[in-house]
Length: 302
Image 1 (cartoon, helix red, strand yellow):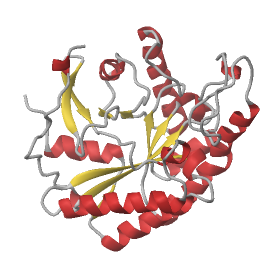
Image 2 (spheres, rainbow, N blue to C red):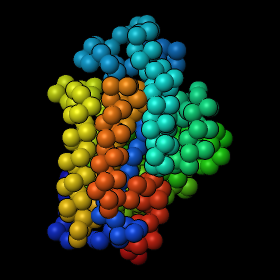
Image 3 (cartoon, rainbow, N blue to C red):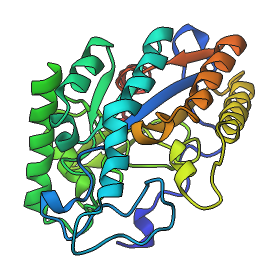
Image 4 (tube, rainbow, N blue to C red):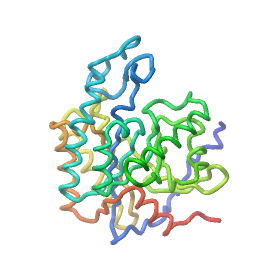
């Protein structure tokens, strides 16, 4: 891949006016990553347990056998953390998009049912929560199809959005070729959706973000307390709110059941929702809503 394949210009100095519904200054996308049960595991035929994004920060991954501590830390997200986040959002009537790993969702149909009943969007996040860079093309294609079928079966609706995270070189093309997706979010390069080309046709990207994201609790020099994350979320929202007087933007908030779902961290989410409600000017939307709005207001050029 040559340097010419990278777009380092984007919208430049004059990004389009988003024209969010109701004249909102900021479109806020809450994303709950549902991964617990789809991570690396000896029980799934992997060489060892997951070594990334769990509470023992910096510990070397265990190979050659099960790491029962890591397994139980991931299980917390499905057993307890998900329901704490679910209560927090549904009590306030705030929508969310779930990036759902197919294998994880399959293992907790009650959670899938609760997502659907809450009116949340459930988007695809791979069949397993693994690195897809070395996965053969046909296997990745099959995993996309299997994830689509699983989400449809468990929630009653097929996913129209996709985010692998640990993306492979063919992922976007395979998502576009599948034919049923409105957008993917495997991109971090902008504050607004944009059109690109994939599989020879226009393709919408709704960028994601890793800065306003609770995974920073589980990395060195990241967030330590709920107050750390809350302060960052408030600063991000306020900056975009000010810019949104003439150039509305998209704000991404990344969440994980096993991380923000801990009782000592949920206050970051609660406090942010309270702050945004007080300030006003926010459109809390699923990524599907953002995508459909963008396609209507800013269709791809022929």
